[in-house]
Length: 381
Ligand SMILES: Cc1cc2nc3c(=O)[nH]c(=O)nc-3n(C[C@H](O)[C@H](O)[C@H](O)COP(=O)(O)OP(=O)(O)OC[C@H]3O[C@@H](n4cnc5c(N)ncnc54)[C@H](O)[C@@H]3O)c2cc1C
Image (cartoon, rainbow, N blue to C red; front, side, top):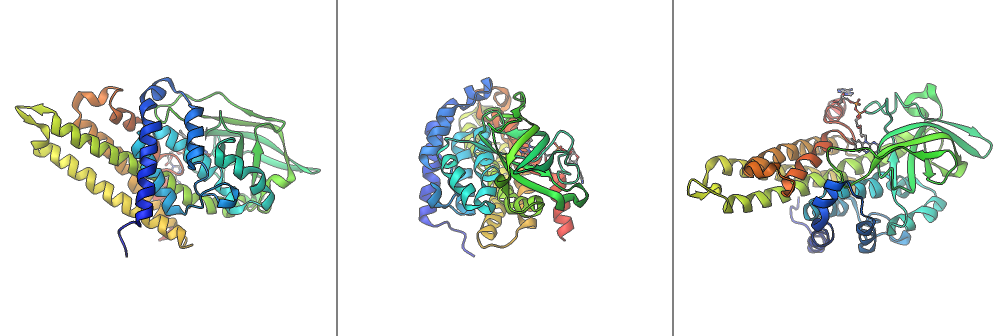
């Protein structure tokens, strides 16, 4: 057991945080209010090496492991105070690209990873459908049928992060219905493939600086070589390989957000005076600060443990699910408590805690709900 991070990792964490403070934070409030996606920020993230952070170096990446990627995500979220761009980054790098990194062929990697690492192309994952969310495999309606040297896809995917701006999507579709989860395959779909289109941009409560939409497949033609892994191995092999990365790295956004809310609230409580003294002197306020720090520390340790297990090649279904439930529920409580510290100002857009309050709501829903995470923990026990 070693609870201190190597100094290179601490330096890297600080540099990512500084990058986010300098290039993302200044416009977070405005982009949130106008639901604006900023390609210039994305390009800078590519130049800084974030968009291919966990890709192998030979494909333009940085070769970062799961712990490094988790810590970078945490630092970015903390510095940026922008859940949306943090989510877009995770959707691109983890769920939209890691299937290619972990399970793709040489030619998949050659064709896609370099462009994804620079941000020239943006990726996303199409799993959820209008009628299938938690029961993604069992209720999936999107079908893929082989015709000559192409797969023909028909169906609709729902809530897809980066949908409106994406160039490449990892798409799951049923190839053999009677086999249930063992009859699902994964395809790489480019936005220019015939029969592919994007639905209208969804208006959201939070994560408004990211883009979300439906993806529509109408006799969409996908070359046969764009299937990842073997037919029918999509859900159990590709999905499994990627999901624990998702449940670890994307959740780090909650930790970064908790840290920035805590720091800001301590500052606020020391400066805000009521009844002739700083509100930080009141025990009720101190209790909130202490509670959030306790939740933050526990969430961070759980998440780092899950990341280290991934890096050691150990399956972590229980650990990643515990970390996800704990951190995503903790950040919602933290947003409430740190909002209380801000009094009426927590209701005003200008205060980052207001945005964090809306952004963090997604955590217990996306990438598997808290209810589903608990059922995974119980099933594994
Ligand atoms: C902003 C946003 C971005 C997203 N990005 C993506 C993306 O990029 N790609 C993608 O594929 N998906 C994405 N999603 C989809 C997301 O992962 C799903 O919303 C999530 O998996 C839940 O599915 P659902 O919304 O259909 O809810 P449902 O599955 O319909 O669940 C409704 C309720 O029933 C509960 N429930 C369901 N089954 C059980 C059970 N067995 N036991 C107990 N309770 C249960 C749920 O916990 C929940 O409380 C995104 C969603 C949002 C809102």
